[in-house]
Length: 314
Image 1 (spheres, rainbow, N blue to C red):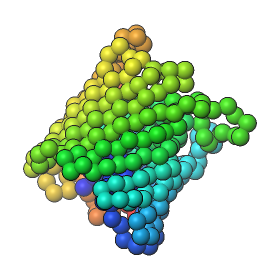
Image 2: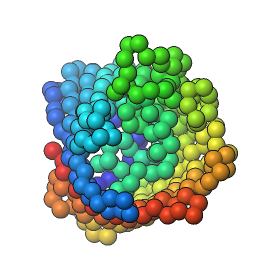
Image 3: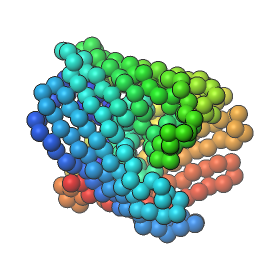
């Protein structure tokens, strides 16, 4: 069954105490979609290849994304999503360095682990902030400490709103030389409840989101029901973004869900609401079928789309 949320939106190697089998492994998935809306009726395909190798206390990983080409993404056919090491430096302490998925926010980076067939509004804001890094990814050094009651991660990062795109970056380009500081706290105080607080500093002059962002999200699972909630407070916005969702396992291998998110940014002069309906069904152990209805409302305009998505794991 496709995961309906990611309580700890970081690579597994970031978690203190992470243990992996010795030797290299290759895994990944193909993401095949058919999207129908007012402007298109389009098939699309991407693939992700994940490589991991563990020797002693160090795990090395790389994630490579390969996209179907068109004129708009010709420079991004192959993207390095992650390239990191994770070192179990001491008991309950993991050090990770390189390029890795943004640990802040409820939605994961990989479509395989996202709850609907459309990326969330809050995920989109975080993705915009990390635009330098080809997706909602960050570069730097982080330390995660398992304190028992919570896992605390602190990171020193490249300025996440840095201008430009690494896929077109050359050594003569001028890049922002400031740093962002990130703090993420994850806790599970009772069975089935996962809480996260994430905070990151940003350079006012580097982007459009201001000097900081604070994300708080929660997920609660009991039996076949999972409910989630998230808020994002961005310094440059007058209002917070918020989202709520519910997912129900109808039977083994089949799930239905509904998500609603809102961005009432008064400074931008327009509010945005997004609604996602989803049905997931396991066709086989390594093949998931999703059918989604997505509506994005901005002012008086409603953009609707229907998506059929196949996720084939290897």
